[in-house]
Amino acid sequence: MIKRPSLAVLIALTAVGPLALNIFMPSMPRIADELGVPYGTVQYALTLYLVAIAVSQLFVGAISDRFGRRPVMLAGMVLFLVSTVICALARNIEVLILGRMLQAIGGATGLVLGRAVVRDLYGREKSASMIGYVTMVMMIVPFLTPTIGGFLDEYYGWQASFAFAGVFGTAVLIYAWFALHETKFDRPQSLSLFQTFNGIGTIARHPAFWGYALFAGLLSGMFFSFLAGAPYIMIELLNRPPSEYGLMFMFPAFGYMAGNFLTGRLSERLGADRMMVIGAMLMILGSLTMVGFAAAGVFTSWAIFLPMVLVSLANGLSLPNALASALSIRPDLAGAGSGMCGFLQMGIGASVAQVVGLLQTDSQWPMVGVMATSGFLAVCCYLLGAAFRRRARIAVRAREAASMSVVD
Image (cartoon, rainbow, N blue to C red; front, top):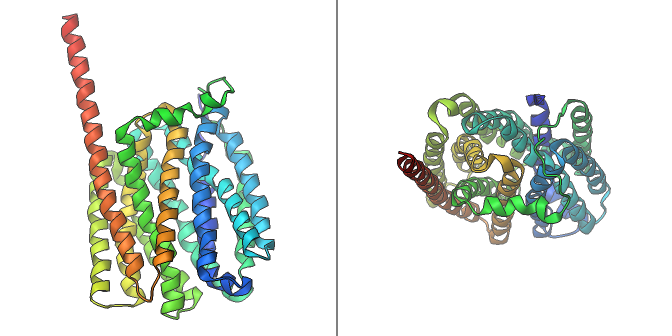
């Protein structure tokens, strides 16, 4: 019998990567000033973090399918701590970016394997509910860390944010060492590279997986568009202090947490697809509201953050169900599937964040436009994923009916 790890350890491990991503955000303008580089150059510390966390997730999941969840998770945490020290001691932008990329690889293990462990233990609807609870509590950390990062940057300098991340990571590593138990026992014994990564190709042959995974990735793209654009809009264009940006960021946090809470309570009752439809409708409403404010020339912090509450609520409802649906396509390859979902989420996030940075002007339109485009494409991908899943079910039933008629 598998000894189930506590929900708390999964939450803590999953939170490490997002914490390192978000606590850094309010410090970007100061880092640009102190290191003597343009703001767009500092943006690479965000973009390449997302690229590194995306690519590493693709391989971390497959490796954990072969070697187990626990050893891969612990090794990733050690790498996270070493790279955090490199970031804190960086005296030029090149070293900082290198440290951020290594930090991302370490943080990726928690993101991938937290979901994989849940799928090891539960079915589609139950895993959606559990992922909802994990992300509800886990997202307190990345949504609140801009508040913490803003105050640390304002009073102690940008290095203090990395010191905070290091202390948090150390506590999580110690906790995981004692509380994280192995959940993946049906592992292949071959050590060949082909055997280890074959699951990625197997998952990629399922169209329904791509529909759900791209839906999740594009929803994340909306969030990362906001992450890339909101600090510049608030601090540089609206001339607000970093601490105020951090406080305003709490409003979308509550929206996301509410969505996750409702997912945990309702997914088993309503089903994953119905929850995703509700989330998509709210996401469209939030996007249209943000576009409407921009078109009307309303350029205030509230015109940015209030619609984001609806978008965050939609993400909280949709993301856990999208991920659970994608992983349910091949439950035996949950590690590879989780890694591919993470790759798409972070890869799309890195791309749209860089687009927002490159298009940045003296208005909110670059951020709003990229968010609205991501939302439209997300809805299209969900519809395709649901259609492919429905077609696959019909094909299975037809084969079963044909086999029954042959027996008769």
